[in-house]
Length: 224
Image (cartoon, rainbow, N blue to C red; front, side, top):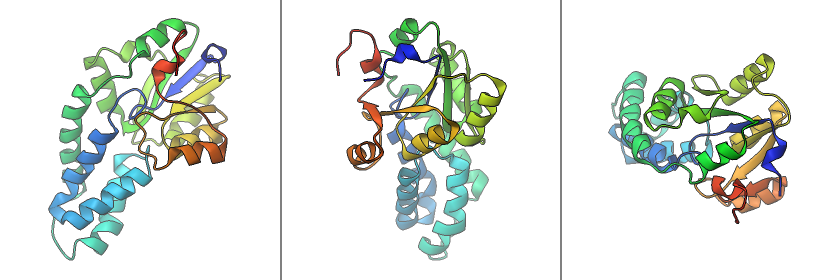
């Protein structure tokens, strides 16, 4: 088991790690896409789940360019801006109501030496506003970052700026989180409790990834 005290930088994904918001995002994608029909909406949901951690901007671009022509059978629907607006409206309500990871504030108190960052596929402005409203923005003294920049771009930029210093640990719940962390030279910890990765056990076993069920497990004195 890794020792969280060994790291001077902790980088957190948001959805499924800090917030129990994966289902919120999944249902928001479905609702936004439904004007194009059930088949198109279901295909977008499948694409979203398979590409956890990728921004809404990329997913709706893929939806209009690839899924709609294949699944909508000529059915008309909202354009990209309207899809994004519908999605954002649904997501805001859910993000303000979903659970925050138990033990998060305690872990922050137990890692006073560490710089904390959010690196998420969620919209950056939306994340920053929501974290303030929920009273957890101050936990992340290294910044709260999100789309339209990709996680790869954010990590590279913040490493170059010195915001992310080594040793650094990325806490995520998706294959993309693992890929982005590895490419950036960060260690990775898979957080499983709220993940939507199918058969995540096989994934972490095959890739030899350290994992915990939830953030609270990392709190000193806690047990899995």
